[in-house]
Length: 277
Ligand code: ATP
Ligand code: MG
Image (cartoon, rainbow, N blue to C red; front, side, top):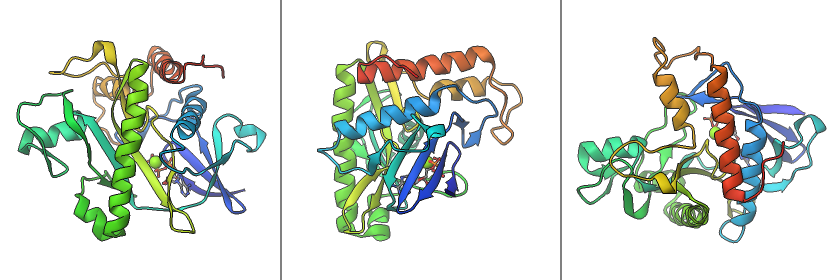
């Protein structure tokens, strides 16, 4: 099979008309892949994505064809429809954190969307908001406005994808909350099918693409206990002398175990099934 793309975390192969999206156990922080793999991570994220695609099927059509992939990738790969991807990261935010918090503190907006005064780190927003970014092939993604997205892909498609992004977020967040997890924000990717319908692609509502917080520990006004990559970002910030450029630091065993436990915990809480590799 032809390797068509090797991302930081996943490898994409072409098999005839289809793509095979293989999730590795690699982990990245600040866009730098660390040298230590996290056992099971690719399988857990793949299985969680598949579960979400099914839950969300009535909200948005998705790219999944099957799990029929070569044996060596079984469990951590998805056979999917090859789409023409929209060059935008479709982000929905229901809570204030990360880059959204930074912009809000500077100018009271997130991605140009004005927000009420008095919000703090971890605050729930009055309504989920759509805060797209560029999908940079090199360097970091940057906030763009809805008008920028319209200019790039047309106003009608932009409006449709904004609505779909917010609806996927609302449904997913409501479902996760029933199971004790706040999905603070998430990044989606959509592609265009040959008949021009927008299709939900890539991975969906995983701890690599979203912020997950335990609902019973949610306390606005500071950093939230995170079940996602924030844990690794926090650890990496404590590594003396690492300036966020390659090569990244080795992850010690106890941190690897803690990460594995978080990924498995998120999978179990959300799907309600035990994680079995
Ligand atoms: P990173 O996510 O680490 O920034 P990346 O996005 O370049 O890196 P991956 O996410 O690891 O790489 O690889 C997945 C790639 O496959 C992405 O470029 C994504 O947009 C693309 N993709 C996902 N689903 C489809 C699809 N159905 N058709 C075509 N491309 C897809
Ligand atoms: Mg990606």
